[in-house]
Every structure is written in C-alpha cells, then in structure tokens.
Length: 130
Image 1 (tube, rainbow, N blue to C red):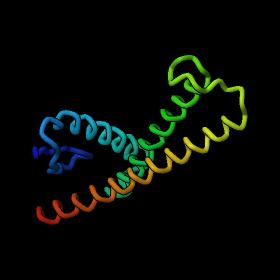
Image 2 (image 1 turned 30 degrees about the vertical axis):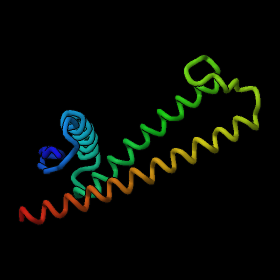
Image 3 (image 1 turned 120 degrees about the vertical axis):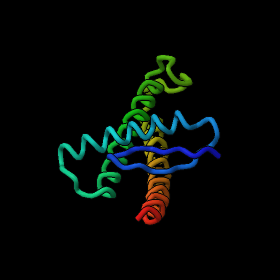
Image 4 (image 1 turned 90 degrees about the horizontal axis):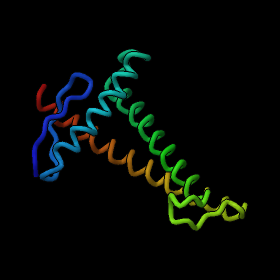
C-alpha cells in the first residue's frame, strides 16, 4: 500500500491507496478541492464536514448527469451504447429509466458510504495531529 498526502481546502490528509494509484487519487483530490473552494467562495466556510458533503453531492450530481447522458445516447440507438434501445417503446424506456434510477441510487449510496468512511478516517488522523 502506498501512502500519499492530499491537500483539500488548505488541509493536508494522509491517505493510503493501492500502489500505482497515487496520481489518480491526487487528481480526484484536486477535483474535490476545486469544488470545495467554489462552494466556500459562494457560501463561505460553513465547516469542513458540511463543505465536504456539499461537494460530494455536487460531484455525485455530475455523475448522475453523465449516467443520464449515456442512457439517452444508448436509447437513441446511435451506436454509442449497445444499440439495443431504439426509443420507440415507451414501456421499455420507462423500465430503462427505472433501472437507471436504481443504478444511480446504488451509486449514490455507495458514494455516501465511502465518504462517511473517509470522513471517519480523516477525523482519526486529525485527532492524532491535535
């Protein structure tokens, strides 16, 4: 396991990751940092945890939009996906929408669990430094 220091919202966090994933994790942290800075600029410093949750929700919303766009492209039958959706059958489209919503809900739940686990790890690291 590799050890990496990530800087988010002017705070440093020690994290571990699989060997070779350091650059990827750094880029993810840069994206989170950017979103948190944008939020802090618009709503002010409302607390680290609250900013983290808000940034996470915004990033997850971006993910949801990306899933939705993929679904629309796939359903249009333009060859972007597996080409099975032709958009002609309303019932099939409704079923596809329900399936997509279930996938997004599962992704949101998984993301929330990972965020909570990260927040707990960060709290432990933060308490050690205090």
